[in-house]
Amino acid sequence: DTAVSQTPKYLVTQMGNDKSIKCEQNLGHDTMYWYKQDSKKFLKIMFSYNNKELIINETVPNRFSPKSPDKAHLNLHINSLELGDSAVYFCASSRSLTSRNYGYTFGSGTRLTVV
Amino acid sequence: DQQVKQNSPSLSVQEGRISILNCDYTNSMFDYFLWYKKYPAEGPTFLISISSIKDKNEDGRFTVFLNKSAKHLSLHIVPSQPGDSAVYFCAASAEAGGADGLTFGKGTHLIIQP
View 1 (cartoon, each protein chain N blue to C red):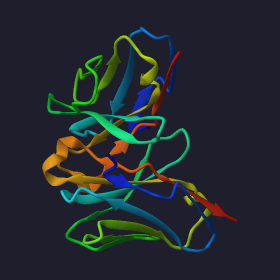
View 2: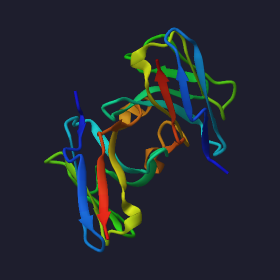
View 3: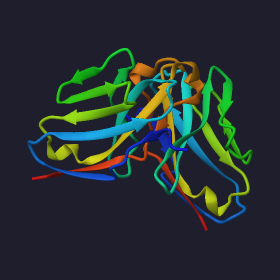
C-alpha cells in the first residue's frame, strides 16, 4: 500500500498543452509538497501546502498551479507546457511544516517530457 | 547558487568496507540536515537526520557527522552492502523556513563492488 502515490509515472506531451499530475498520500500528513528534479539533478521545491495554505516558490512560473481538493491530495496542473518543463516531478508529504526530524515521504516521481 | 554541495558525483566502495559521503553547505541559517537514498525510478527515501545542536547521530550501519564550523557533514555506512548502491542526497533546512522545504544537493551515486 503506497504511502505517497503519483500518477502518471510517465507523461509525454506536446508544447502548448495543459496537463495534470495527481498525488495522494495515505499517511495522514498535514503538509504536502511538489518538487522538481531538473536535468542537472537538483531537487527544488515548487510548492508547499499546509492546512489550505499554499506557499509558492517565487521562481515557479504561474503556469504551474497546485490544487488540493482535500488534505490527502495535492495535484499539479501545468498550462501551456514548454520544452523547459521537461523534468521529473516528485510529490512529498510530511507530518507538518515543522516536523523536520521525520523527513519527507516522497512519491516515485512523474517523468514529464515535452516535445 | 548551490547552498548544498555534494562534490563527488560518484563513489565506488568494496562490499564490507566503509562508505563515506560528503556534503558541504553555505547557508549559515541551516540548522537541520538530512540524508536521503534514491533508487532508479523511485522517490528519495529518508535515511537519517541530524540537528545542528549535535555533532553525531547514529542509526544502525549509518552515522551522520556534522562539523558546523566547517559547514560540512558526512554520512558513514559501515559495513557497506550491495543494497546500499543508490544515489544519496544531502538536504538541509532552516528552522524559520519550514515552508521553504528542504534544499538538496545534486547527489552522490554510491556503487558497492562485490
